[in-house]
Image (cartoon, rainbow, N blue to C red; front, side, top):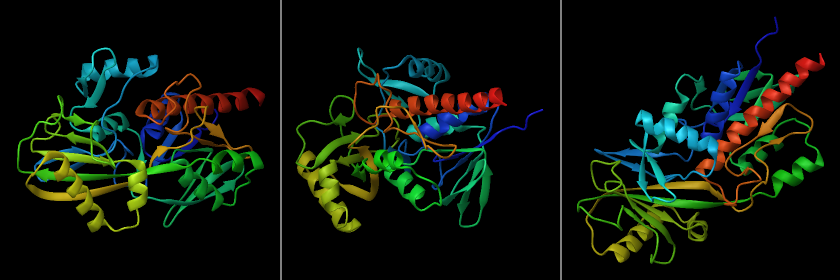
Length: 330
């Protein structure tokens, strides 16, 4: 009887978790390695006193049959609800976006707070090397943002062919700052708690998490545009927060701020996307996937929650097909 194949997935965002779930279903021994203290990636939620604030993805939309099927199940389970929009609904997770990923990841082995420093060829498989742990796999899926993934590959003693460098080296991301403000007043922002038009220069959107019904207390998530975030990236947290607060007060009028926090997303939105849902290295059993890897039929042209989900499902199918083909050849 053939030994169960071991697959390591670096990155516990949506692409990694969906790929993991699918590969577990197909009978593989899967482990997710995540550098943070929780899975979810940009499906991020933060507890602030008695409140809850989403500070990554604000909502998600559905264009594909695959995600539509998932959404029907999530609605039935009470994990998500429609926020607004009838013809093109925007969906949110009931207890914050991160809770949805936590639910999907339940039962999948995950190593948290572990940063992979190198990947080493261990023919016919690969090894991941972190500061205190070495793990051996038959294949690896790398779902970190492409610039981070490329840095890891270049720091690793792996064979990258010219086409690998050409494809991976061209992708850049823009950052996003998100200011989280606990306020005293009960405010209504827009019709549903989202304001994304007529904002001060540099502001992308303001979300009222209480109005969104994910927070019991008034918490605002203030998203800054990519160009603004890039220009402020090295100016220090205190100065950056002060400027976001100034713009917020200018936008809304005087509000009483109880507490403030800043979240930096270094890789928030891909400036360049792949028109393929995944890539495989030429010389190694190593695949790359994530929200910057778009299905050719995706007309949005941008990184989204759905693009991460579809990328994860497609790469899982490709890895499964790869191993089944190897067995057939033997």
